[in-house]
Image 1 (cartoon, rainbow over the protein chains, first blue to last red):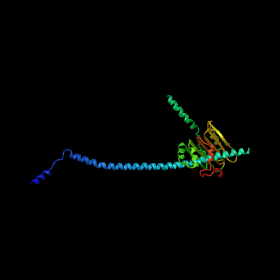
Image 2: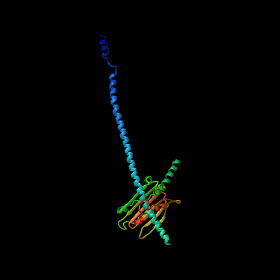
Image 3: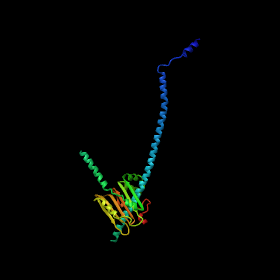
Image 4: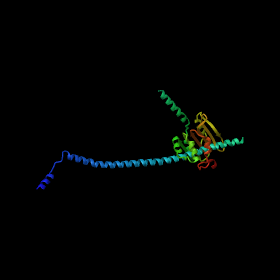
Length: 99
Length: 171
């Protein structure tokens, strides 16, 4: 009998403390919201990092192309200028040698 | 107020020589008639960028890099025509008229059969701070404007380097 009484006492219905349901609901609402936010942050950081690295890579490629193009332009300009100056110098020297 | 006046004066002093060397090199009438056009515009920023791509190990490339390092701009316009007399030779005079009093004629070559070449240098003291080369051939008109300190002797030595054939030998 003692055992039955003990079991009844232990398993008797008890009302939860005040505000228990509210706290549980609040925690349920809070917990699932934290996980997607963490995932979203990681994804956004990855996308941002990929965009920054990709953008920097594209910028470097474009800069390299621009630099090579500018170098070619410099060489062409110097070649044209050099040729004209050389021609003028040769003409002046030719006139000098006739004198 | 006094500081402002000094800053303004310094700004103007820096701006005037730079703008004085700017020459109008737009020739739409030549561009429309020419069979081949070479149009090169390299401002200081582009020159700085280009200089990074010249190797420091190769002597020829180093020479060009050193030459362009102090320049503010290089501008080239060259027009090749299908036949003779396709452009007004007075255009050279119009160009010369743009040059200010600091510009001195260095070399003038006049030829009936070949090309006329005029080389003008912008002199500040003994220093050449700019160069304009005007070349008028029967079928070709070329203008080169180098803005900044330039060694003319070294410029003439560049031809034939970098595996680029000498133009004078092609003719």
